[in-house]
Length: 211
Image (cartoon, rainbow, N blue to C red; front, top):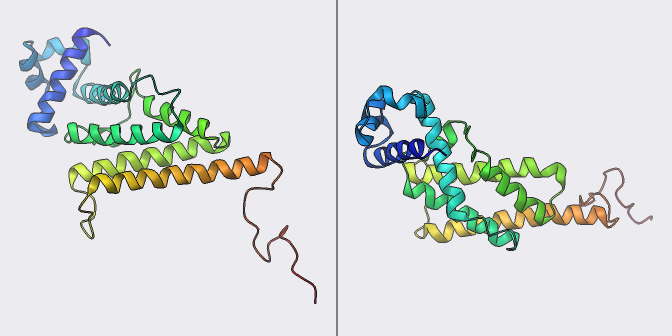
């Protein structure tokens, strides 16, 4: 990312952190970096492009927080680290964070989260045909849950007194779900059938004892 563009995006994100998304304007950002509003356009375009830039910056910050040295770490630990990093990003930038759900990312880092989830699912042994679907589901949970948490959108009924422990329990449920999908695939590869438990009365299920 160009140094000048990065400076402008950093200042725009700081402005949103301090005053909320509604306070962000080209003029307000320009004042923070000592430029005129028109001088911003060659670097970040108009306001819509600036918002897209914030999405790219958030993705970039997430990738930096997780790091690039996780390839040799067990996929379960990688998923937990990724989930916690997503949640930490939400709490660090609660006003800007909902943009990850509301706008499409277009920059070089836009596909980072999806790529990270694909790598985790592949290493876990999830069938290739199921990887994209499961990645979308997990991404929707991580972004949706954490957005609801920082915006107050989660239901208040029976809210846990220990949100950190509750989130870790949710991550454990995701691990178990991935293990189940991978186990079904392993059963198919080993000749154990379709991986779907047989049910009485369904075609292909074992016949009951004759009387």
